[in-house]
Each structure stands twice: as C-alpha cells, then as structure tokens.
Length: 446
Image (cartoon, rainbow, N blue to C red; front, top):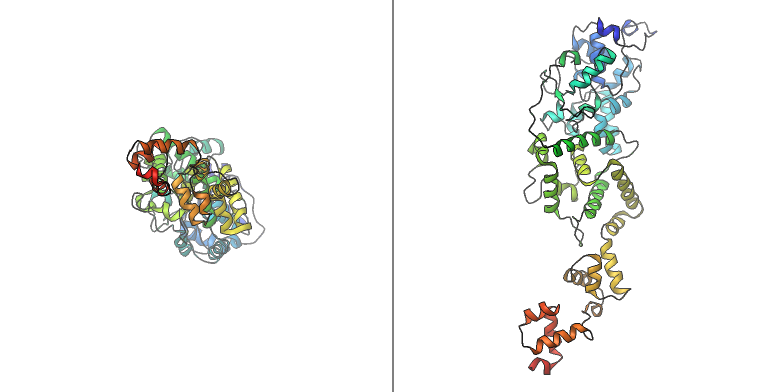
C-alpha cells in the first residue's frame, strides 16, 4: 500500500481493456525498462510474473530479461505507447544502448528489428552477452545508498540503467561498490520480477582489495561508460577506433618511426595502469596479455576484421585519453581524414615524421644525421628508410669531408687505432672509414 500511495502515475487509458484499469507507474529518471515492469507488476497485484510478462510483452519471459528484453513491438502495442517508442526504450532504458554506438548501422537496424518482432536470444548472442559469465556482464546491480535516498525522497526505489553497464562497478554518486541482486538467474532470466524493496539485502560481491588509484580508475570507467552510451549520432566503427588508438599511442611515444605500435611497451603500460582491476572481468575476456600478441590489444591495434565488446574499447579510451571530450575530438579528426583521403591520409597523419625527414633531407639539404635528430630517430634507421624511398644516394652520404669531423678522423687514423674505436670517437660509421681510406692510399698505408 505504501508503494502504491507514493508511486506517481501517468493516469488511466480510455481503451476498454485491461490496461484501462491498471495502475501505471511513471518511468523514473535513469530507470531501466525491467525496473518499470517490476514496479508495474507489484502495483497491479504481483501474483505471477510470467502472467505480467505475457500481458505486457505477449510472451511469458520476454520481460524477465533484465538487460535486453524482446518482443518490444508487442510491448508498445499493448501499453499503447505509454512509455514511448520501443526503439527509444531499447536505446535509453536497456543495455542495448551500451552496445549501440559500437554497432554498424546495418547490424544495429537488423538487431533492433529482431527485438521488436521476436525474442532477444539471438541478439544477445551476436552482442557477445552469452559468452561471458562474469557478474560484471550479467548481474543486476544497485547501490544501497542510492536505494535509501530514493526511498527517502520518493517512497520507492528503482533499478538504474547507468548502474547496469559492464563498466559500472562503483556508484558514480557515492563511490561505493555496487551490490548484486541475490536472486539466482536461470540462463539469464529471473524467475520473478525483482523489486529493489525486496532485493536490498543483495550480495555484496567479493571484491579484491584495491588501491586508491585502482578505485579511481573504476570511477573513471563508470563515467566513460555513461558518456559514450549517451553520445548522439556517432558511430564508433572498428576501423576508425583503431586509427584513433594508433594516433594516441603515437602521442604517448608508443608508435615507431616506421609506423608500428610498440606493443610490449603499450601492454606493460596498460597492465600497469589497471593493476588489480583486470581480474574483475576474468582472464578469458582479455586473452593472455603476456603472450606474443599481448592478448586482445594486438587484435585491436592491427587489422583484424571482428567486433570487440564495448568494454574493451572503453578500457582503451580511458587508458589512452584524458577525457571523453579529448577522445571525441580525436575521433572526429581521424574520421574526417579517413573520409577525405582514406588509408593514405591516415598513414600520412600517423607517419608525419617520415614526410618531415624526406623534406629536411631533399628540400632543406640537411645532412641525414641532423635531419634524423630533428625527427627523433637514429641515423641508421633514417638512412635505411630513405634508401627504401629511393632518395638520391648522394643525399645520404654523411657530410664529413671538409668538416672538423674529417680532421678529427685523420688524426685518429694517423694514431693507428682500431676501426671500431676510431668510428666511436669520431662519430662515423665503420663502413665510412673503409670507403674513405679506399680513395686515399697514402693515408691507408700510414
């Protein structure tokens, strides 16, 4: 009675059917669709959950999937659109909205259509939800402090969409670990609609002891998950995301002059940043980060044609970028470059040091050693690169003859030192000494 008295309603319907006399609760801020169904179930008798699901969805278990329900076309029809369009509900009030920004447009439309007309089993399979058994992916979560605050202010409580995201392990408001609903799921389905008033004695998940830095990273992940779920109109394609990660790895110094990622260095930094957090998601999720390919990291940074779980992308964006705003700025920049010039434009952006080296040597006439120093690469790497690019051999010759370095070289040669020592002290290559003496027989004889 207390819940019915305090729970606001959007009013009765004029249709002469069961819904006309039902008590219809208002959808609260950040409330999941499953939560609304659970409150509707309690307010209207709450006798048999399968019967309520059949009334709302035309199916006995469609509404009992707490993350992504199916038969949403029936739901909109039977509720007369009281909560809005089914597509919007799926994007805003279920976990489908967490996956949506990372889905190709065609695939998203296909999956949405399946959720409108049928069950969610195949959709869940394509989204990878059936692959991971970690509570981070399939638990119904809540913050006890949020529940107490909701009851104090409204007289009832509701499950929050933002707390169900795989990135949400810490409450964004109170900074406390989220608890899991104690009721056991059977193949992802609850046997009954779970009310937060009844689930407050949930399972406080067994959490490892984490440092303050690790807890800060968990809070950041929660914020990232919500921020990227709420982006408007952007599609994070695998191709453009890969380019963004490469671009940002370059800014951190984890990208080589020749255009490859320093994968072991990046892997070590990734593991070092997340510390004990990685174990919360299970080793199967990341693969073996310490094998030759560094687990999922190498697959993301290289051209592997497969989609990744959004959590992996959010872990990488949080790792590489300081904020969602910085990430979105780089994303739009990379996307624009790719649309205008394709892979060539991206390569030029990632390998601008190569273009600068060629310009310094050919247009500015700098010695290779000086040009290499300006772009931050060794002279040997610069020479090999320029030779492959077909830069004139004359330009690659060290500028030694006629300089003070030549005088120093002659002095060391006259002392009769070994070639390795001379090369080291004079700052020239051993091969240059051989070529230099080949055209100076008298010096060679001495």
